[in-house]
Image (tube, rainbow, N blue to C red; front, side):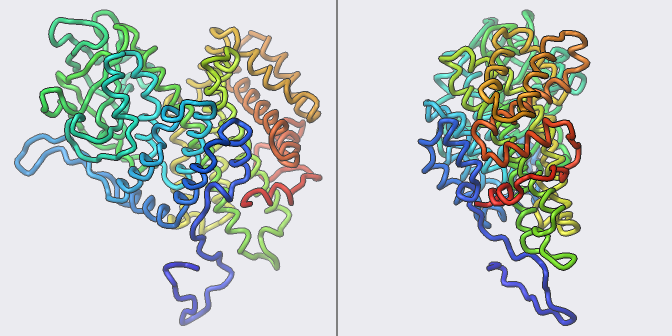
Length: 554
């Protein structure tokens, strides 16, 4: 029942042939692919927590809060009424409600508070479900999650900050951290002249008290061009010392209880992710503490970047899932040309194809999560996590805008209207391809892993060969990929093609090993077979549409 209780009998007509109000979703129980992936990738022990989270997060109330947070954008409050500089951003109350829900459920900390096999898989499941509702809140969640390994570069900083980060209390107050019950941590690396080329940065750091190196105090001066979630309690950033590019922890408040000189110049007017503030910040003698070795800033902050890239894959898989659910709901209740859309063969083809893309994205994300979980004790798993994170980040994030766009088209005009939520998903979808390395950067990172990590390619091929014999198209793709990876000619020119083929073959192998046979066969035939099409809805005759469509909402 629609809680708004609308009037369907209008003066000129009755409202008919329109889908009913969707109401609450159970993001866990309705998603058989998610439940299966969590179980076979080692996080079955988290089922009870994930089930409760999925039920609560999918309520109509949560979706309404997400809508309010996105309609009422963050506002910069640079000064108070007396002219004093504040450098604050004010958010709609719904944003804070969503932040509270995320932090109380360990979306920012799950692998670190559950340090056991399956921790990263459970984290990905939380991200996947939450991001179906709201993406802006997930920006500070992702950065706070990913900062933990980087903080460990300095023992003293880690001892001081990690307990605050792992707190399950959301404290929105803009006060010194030692007065707060929990904190969030962000990151800003890019400058306008450099972008992804952070070595082109010009920000400088000078020792505050003459002492240099890890854990010492510095003053930073420069500009940072894209600083999201500027109300975080601290940030990791890069600046040059006399030794080289180094990493610094920059708090919003200095140790003397004064506001740090983080001058927010403006908030960005973005395509999507509108509930989250993204800013441009000037640093003028801004207090910071060196994190890690002097001159090793990129290596230190890359610990955080890698976590954010994994987040991007899980986040994009979540967007794809929600777009699929919305399209499915529409075609189940809408009729055209004499019968329901779901009974039209071509619509079945399109919807099943969208479902394949969604399940494949989830399968690859979860497998990389398991590799991350096993990295500490298994060199092959560590290598797979290293190269697999880049592969998954590139391909899943690249496919999300196309998949969401096709789902929107299933609704037609109603899908183009904001109330359908799909426009918000569509605006959100390109973000993950840009954040922490756009397509070219990710593909070059795949090549870098292949060149520097002797175990990387063998780890990928080892995973693929586990599925040998399950599908003829998959077998051919594995053989072709193995041959192609030995050809070193024009590798950079072919980097996108190589990365795409690795992603598709891995997805096919994972579905063949652990997925539903109908899903695996259709994926391999349509993505790895000779008649591959770039458009959704071109699945071949003989596809088991009934089984694939039946898995969308179990």
